[in-house]
Image 1 (cartoon, helix red, strand yellow):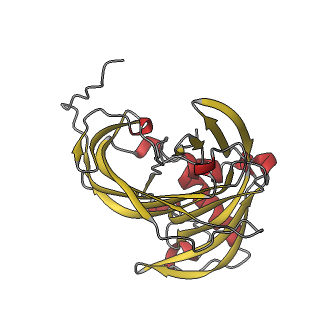
Image 2: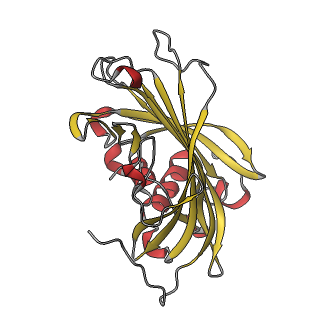
Length: 299
């Protein structure tokens, strides 16, 4: 299940947030020197390195503890012009629309959100999806699971070594063709689903050289038809080591998404050529106690 990015009456289902990886230091390829001394894998050992990353991404759920964290989303909008290549142009400055602070609970392998504040106003149990603008929700690890699922037939290419926040990483490019992709963009107008397309996607991932864990992941949808109301969708995710209950886990610490509308006549005029940007931070991770009760709003 992919996540949802909404821009006014437009919904683009891009990818799930947040995305979680527990630390499994033994998962690095034993036959590869990269797993022992942070050396960059060479073209011969790179396939083994990617297989270690695949095992990490596909097999972690059982190791995750129940926990709570605070998710803060800043939503920005701007109007701009794009060239014939549909690239982003400088346009006007980003305008902050609102701040959304939510309590994210991960319990029994499921996530739930409780809205704490919007624009510094109290809003317990308010649904952020009911507000105009761009927002995000989703299931844990859906993006990583999709990318590293053998069914996606993702093609990875070794690029180079890079240091991210003092950590030795391996940068790899990737691409997933449309035929193997589960990424969808959806266009809704007045609550009615009008068009859905499946898209190819590409990007880069940065993997810890010692453990083959994903440290950063960038994604961009490609092959969007020129007449589709959504012109561009992309995201960047950053992970960090977080201590929960005395154990360290790779957890999302920051994410940024970008959604751009086209000049399609299917859009209301005021929604054409609009850019929506979300900047999301995850903080204050702590263990979810068994004596904590979750109360949900009545249906």
